[in-house]
Length: 258
Image (cartoon, rainbow, N blue to C red; front, side, top):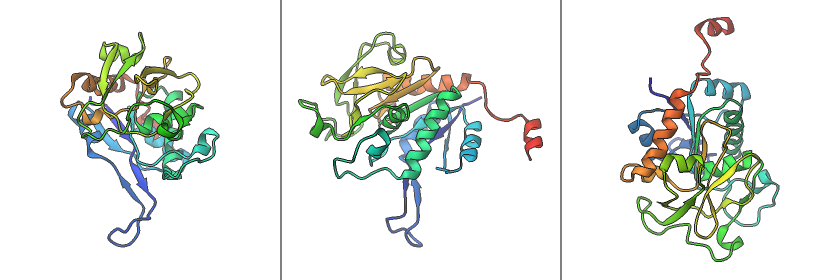
């Protein structure tokens, strides 16, 4: 049976004009969904519900989680810092939902793949921090916002031996694309940094005690169709999700709770 993958959308709180007025809107780059579907999963877009009980029910219906990227930044207050720059902030509805999802994924051993801003949420949920703006806070760094199309490779990364990422791609180095101005600063509790760029910026994090809990700073959804190593990332994630015991309530439990 194909694994069901819950995919987090982005959220606009209603500050742009839509037909019918300024309405709160969910939106999502279709490439995330296509990667899951084409490689053997069933993608389900998760509404950013605020009720904890509703969130638990959502998790009962999925075998894995894909935390997607976002244009805005996490509020620095979430990792104990004041906002130093003028970049827009992720809507609180999304950040609250994703941070809670990450912690639930750890408790319940739910296979989780986090991409770009999703990796940053993963790190902050585990008590880590971020560079609010790499060019302003780190000397002698690469250009991490490539000007070439996202389907092009931008720079290399070095991969920690024996890490989950190393076991997936079977390489000590690989090429990635790059589109971010923030990155992991202090790695969250129990997480490890499993890949770095040549300038030392952390490009991947993971939880060694978890069946599959991997954050990637780059965007493999743009690369999986043309590059085997990036396709393997999704394939291994989907295999982990397909092997996981389901959290779905039994029919008898559903009847008792109705």
